[in-house]
Image 1: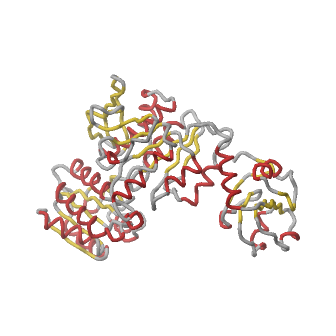
Image 2: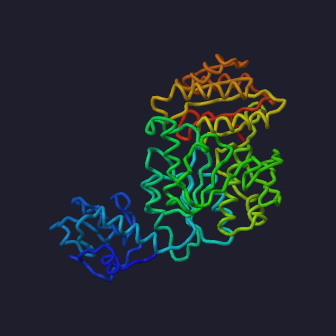
Image 3: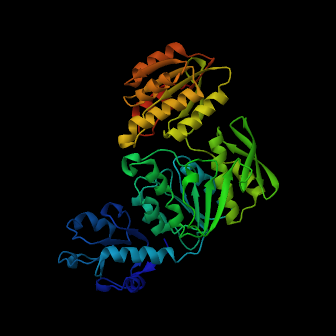
Length: 459
């Protein structure tokens, strides 16, 4: 965070100093008690604080509040700024702080590929710039303030992942980040427990248009059917389309599987640029196209972007290939599961596993609400379309995938289990060196994670 004095902050908030010193310097910010983890934090609160004993280790502390507390008067190194409304003061502070920095800010949303694309953009830019970014997969709305305050005078660019759990999430993130570049990687079917319908979920992702203030630069996957449904009529900025279609501004062609990744050609402004991205699957090429397009908009040449991209290190559990039990090949994709990522993983299984017996082990798709049955049926249809030799599902709802795949005409051995130990016992008997196994589930599904670990050959 760029250090700010209480005197400066008091003026910004139109507040009154009722305790402490104007000279205290603020280095951190918080709007929840549990976010206070350092001294010299500014904390916004509309409610009375009762447990001052817990906060003593974080003094000096700056409190912005509309409350008066007799307890606070006896606390040394506590500075209090009185305002009419702490919530409004908080948003004044956020607005002021963001406007201190005129840097490119990339916001990324999508059903699949958000984290990977964000990490790719960060990796490409970090070669010669200081970049602020979301950490790992932590894109929670409660972390927005900390990410905003990670920008300081030395920051030259920022890349933030903006997830959609409910309608309004992308807009809320934009109040903090005010992105200049927006990326929508793709739109599948997810978080329907809150968005209720696929149309509402598409609209929630389409909030990126308003997040960019209907201007700036929007990078969109032109090959994705649901992304094409976003209403762009009120967007007055620049639209960059990525994909395989000839009309795309960044077009991928000659896509080939290589050892540990994908070779492809990027066609841009009538020039061809050979590229390699670590990680298997065409979906990884789409992630790379988004990242390269964003980096190019910020000033990185495509040859430089290509050179940096080939050194990218992807996250664990994202289509990682290991030697498995009984000499088999194991593809661990236990990062997340949506219909979009499932289709991508099945395509990788078929491509990498040519001439081998293909086994798919699949867990339940979460966050679907009343759409759970329908989406699991759609997953079953994807399994039928892509084909496997052996299908193993784990979990009550995952069984729906298996049943619908069979109903659709899947010609495979199908097993449904409620727990992973039974699945492991089966697999020890049916896999060998001519078998390739895909295991896919949610990162929060303990049975799937444990099974994936057990299926690796022990060194």
